[in-house]
Length: 616
Picture (spheres, rainbow, N blue to C red):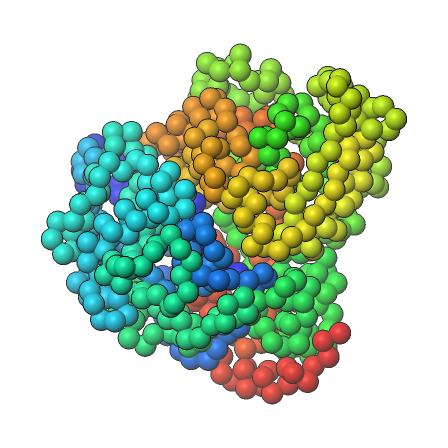
């Protein structure tokens, strides 16, 4: 489900429109929560009362229960150690809040104003005087400074890279914080800093920030922890004294009195929990389930609703990621061959009931995706690196084999075998081996057994090439540890993207990130060309140059064959017991569960019948 998140991709905000020079006059977010944007002026007027996609008079009350798979043992989501509880982001506030119906726009939350220096050399946030933590103590500039410094020094490696363009931070009085930026700071730094979660420095004094947190923390957010049982469930209670509840950026949100996350050891058991009426809501990401698993009596009686919510956001990329730190995946020809062996058309027809589109870009479902051949400004960026890039990048549009859906992908497999032979691998006794006689073999690591039905047919095609492949599903906590340590051969990876890619690209693909355990550079991408394209993306100060740089980066990554692209869907498939009310106006993000509420009239009818419904 969609919740407030800590590590979202940058949305690229500056206080002047992106096409204006960085030396343009500084602007501020006026008191009351006005906003700033990167692709144009904010869509809401200075005196707006609420976001247009919410119901500002949504009733408060009731309880909602969601499911999670795996377990948790910590309330600290900012560190590598431990498994943080779902929903922990409800406990704290950030400086700015993004608008989900506008591209690259955010409005003040903790920050009453935000100003950028005319030379783009600093960003200044002024806190709202009414901002308070749950114990009534004020949120101070010193808390902002402490949070920033602690996250960078003791938090996940992500933070060091995300805030790498900050030269220094200092408090000026109780309410003003000044971030001084490095000369090459990316244009989105005000938003990146606006995403900073502000923690209470006094509460953390004497506590080890690097250790899993087992006591409920003090926060400033709309909810507090009501009760919890590690690895089993956690319940949050809405705070009626939440300091920001009447701010325009919060009006219409946070309507449930109680939010509970129940943990299950297996996704199939979680689905059964939903059918039994123990779980209220599901964001169904398995096409087969959507097509076949919801034909039970509660659906037939109208007690459970199925609804598709289209979205207009970049889908990013999901695929089988190859860890290039492993010698077996060092050669891009090997990676290309392995990618060509995947029969998407058969999988989409047989496994997904035709429900998906093939992903052909790291920025799918958006105009940020490259297409055709590089031309104009994009070609000019790539030309200096021609000798370091595959010749085909300049002469052929990026494509993947298109099979007929019958399961007979022999032409693609033959083409893959030729690539493997060029890379020094040949089939001997039905096994693919190198010149030293070593067979090609690797493991596909999964954290969700439901992906076995997707992975095993792919394994069979790889075996037809003589490759020995095993599949191993482990629990989410073990999986996260192994991914943090880059201890895997192949795994299913997901890289979300925003309307305005920026500094987060360094964490995804930068050479420096490839060396840092726990970073988001899972495939170990380490390429001077990729680094150069990332630098162009970060430095772009108008929409035209940004598009050229992102297209070039996308093309270089695609031709690097780091991932076997899978599929995407520009919509959310939601199933829920008929107890909710929600805004009906479509908007870019598709849906936001924080804007839903319990419809007491519906709940009275549904709750009376739900546990008597047949779950079969």
